[in-house]
Image 1 (tube, rainbow, N blue to C red):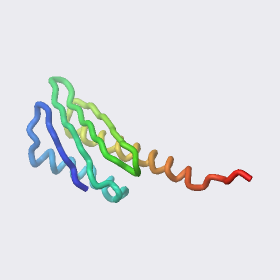
Image 2 (cartoon, helix red, strand yellow):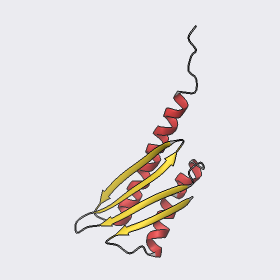
Image 3 (cartoon, rainbow, N blue to C red):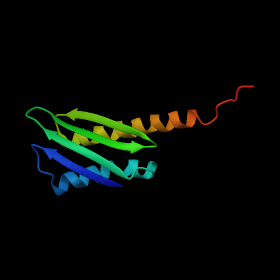
Length: 102
């Protein structure tokens, strides 16, 4: 998976890159169809936020997480992304067996 990181008021260090790759490795294993993931990390005075966006089966999936610690925000964004992709995967599977009208 190609992860594109951008920072607003923060320099993207190797530690941040490692934390993102570790947290999103599970998503990469569960959803191999995802090729690109773009993330924007924002650091403000009392809150750090992460916005992650990707394309999955023709739909845009975006999540936003905000915490007081940047690494906690990255972990929360990974958890929310996993839940959003699971919901999208379930919606895709529910339309698979539609009945025909006779």
